[in-house]
Image 1 (cartoon, rainbow, N blue to C red):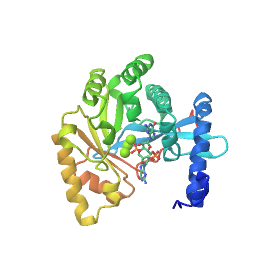
Image 2: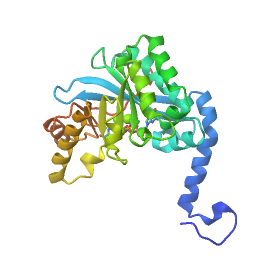
Image 3: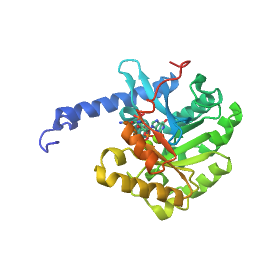
Length: 272
Ligand code: C2E
Ligand code: MG
Ligand code: MG
Ligand code: MG
């Protein structure tokens, strides 16, 4: 923890904290170059129909191929991207790259040739970026039917705020793309607000599978699936790691499942 005495900022911090700050700062300095040098890659994780096991789509998950540090997961650099104001630019790259991959059938990795691609969208893109224009152009350029693009936004990013979230989502929906609320159950779920949004999918955070005691898990998941369908959306349970998790997802009637049991995020064959 930081101590009051002493001078010169960093000297007051504990060593691990200091290292963390220096590392974040170093990453932030590397970022503009990384965007320009296209050091980012997308890995794709299958999304499966719970009832049949069929692969219906893939979620694009960004990684940074850092020249010295190796492959970095989003948790290690997205905060710096956000802080550096580069999320709009990176987000547009992710969107275009993922849509292109889907249009090409994911290099043969897709379960079906109408497999969808899920792309995570951040609040900064909603507020500052020309998200609607990017979303209109990417499928149009590649010929991907817009319905095969699913945009995932976390609950907190969908909260009513400075930007007219409902208005932007209605516009996106108007383009024919599908919309998901991501990591449902981890934020302050404003159900009255969510119910007014045009949502196609609710993705249930994996903490529901991991953190809930067995005797509660099934009831809570079943209620969540019921709530999802009351919102007029399909349900996707994330973090399916064991056959028991999958059986549970099936038993509670979740339409989709995603997790290490069904497939890890991997690069496409032609991008590896
Ligand atoms: P998310 O959108 O909820 O994506 C699912 C995360 O859970 C991914 O982590 C995935 O690798 C991980 N995961 C999937 N199945 C399992 C499982 O069975 N067990 C466990 N333990 N984990 C599993 P990842 O790739 O590290 O991404 C973390 C988060 O970073 C994503 O969570 C998403 O919120 C964000 N993110 C990733 N790519 C992008 C992007 O292109 N743009 C934006 N804005 N955010 C992104
Ligand atoms: Mg997601
Ligand atoms: Mg997801
Ligand atoms: Mg999620």
